[in-house]
Length: 103
Image (cartoon, rainbow, N blue to C red):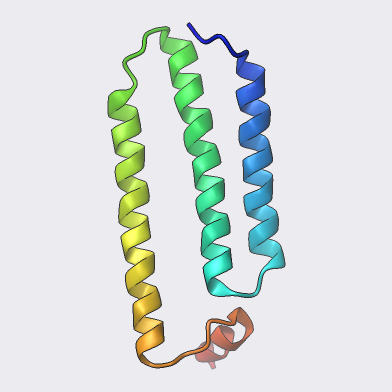
């Protein structure tokens, strides 16, 4: 039984998702954009977990949490390796300069 109303979790996840979207839109630095995407993913994880718990009514959400945390860990490893790839060639992490790679 959740002692905190579900509406609070919905508002919290919406606020975190909004912070993530604004961070991606406002930032021009690659690492800050990735951090903002991670914040948005945490918000969706929180909402999915709370909604699953409220629909099923039992506390058996460990498989869902393990799956979501595994996806987040794989994403973090991929982003760190991409960052190390860019740092090896001393490439700027400014997104405007990265868009020149298309040309």
